[in-house]
Image (cartoon, rainbow, N blue to C red; front, side, top):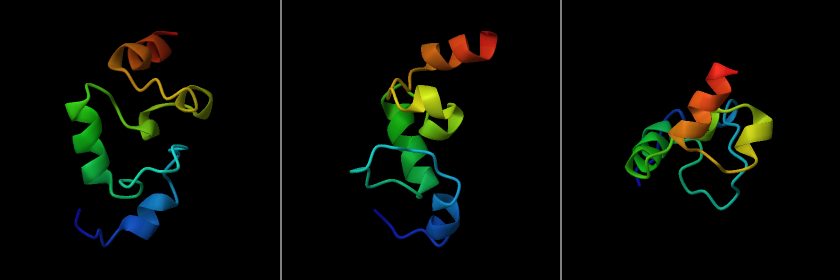
Length: 66
């Protein structure tokens, strides 16, 4: 993984609670990973949903519809 010149700035707004995540603050890597998994990154979810680690597109759509 490459170093990101914006990592520290990105971390200030990153709401990911998954601590062993090596992509935290490196948004392009995070998006690439979650896209490959059929998910969205933590920043698309409110804190109460993010904590469940259900990053599915289905969950995202349910939130947006309610």
